[in-house]
Image (cartoon, rainbow, N blue to C red):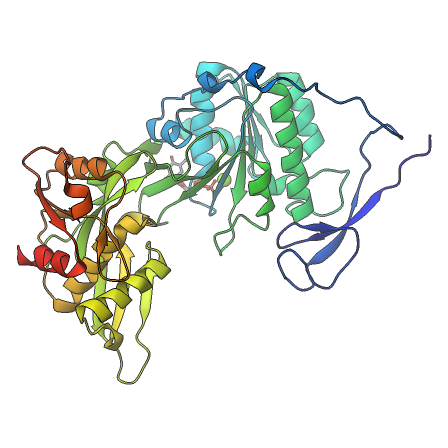
Length: 457
Ligand code: TYD
Ligand code: MG
């Protein structure tokens, strides 16, 4: 049998699309001059005709599910983000900026997992085994059952998996992995993609869960490979403000559970500790009684969190375009809120700069934050503080109406738990809502009503 020819492909370095022929522009993402020639070694396949399938089809009703098999590691905020624990066979990508704490988190995970479920293989392509040991000592995460390998070659890692028979594999980082069968430097899109695909296959064959660490670029995307997100089962994003101690772990994708789940940690001398009372921590530095500061109740995955929105509004330079700078809230939703405040409520915002920020590095993407944003901007513009005992939530429509949102009860109960006394909420949510009496419900149907109620107290 003649040896199969090496296959030539052209791969877009931006989006990972591949083509049999070169082209000046990627048809998938529209980038110019991004196609790079790569050679892919032939897979070992039969030369002709029908092949024996690797598996037989099974009646859907007879397929076994292993949802009961989640393995919690009892690091509460971490388990929460994974929907209860680590699922055997799942490949999980952990993305985050350099220095945010990815290696720290995964070493803690390795330690707990090893003690509970068996050997862990920690593949470190970035730091030497000695460096990892020093960190493990500091974290009190030394274990006889963690095996460290300073490897960057994918096939060597596969051998070690055979030798050790780990119950969990951690690859730190996927960008350091390379395969001799493939052209391209470590970290190049083709290498990273191929390495991830190999790990995905091995994880599924052997039922071993795997974490892949991925560095993110300045734009916030996982370095180069958006494609990685398609290959893996779970994508976790780890971030926070670099100079504060808070770290946020969120699910961006989860084939086996809910996305938008959020876990909060604090970076300490002893590593990452779950934050026991996230709402309390997020409100800890709130400037009570300051104009522009508003507390909203936000649903993050399966729980409600209280978060502070801050607005700063000042006159724009005469004749210039007013600035709109937002961080932590959705820009297009904010534009709608600004338009409604201007057109329906007569606020002179076109002559003012508006800055919005969400405290603690949180991101509020749901429309339920609209009303809080509106009140924060109006409060800042008028220089009148909002009653510090009030929590706000509700979606705003283009006519200036306040619309009902989901999870109203959970949002209100979180306000009760933190000792708030008033809750401004959509009238559509207030009917029949059961909350303890010490929380006064203030139903509103329009933005105008909400502004009056928020700043009257
Ligand atoms: P690291 O896990 O190396 O980040 P990444 O893998 O995402 O690049 O963590 C880097 C930072 O964390 C480093 O600046 C030191 C700090 N750190 C602590 O504050 N406490 C600790 O216990 C450890 C291990 C690290
Ligand atoms: Mg690291």
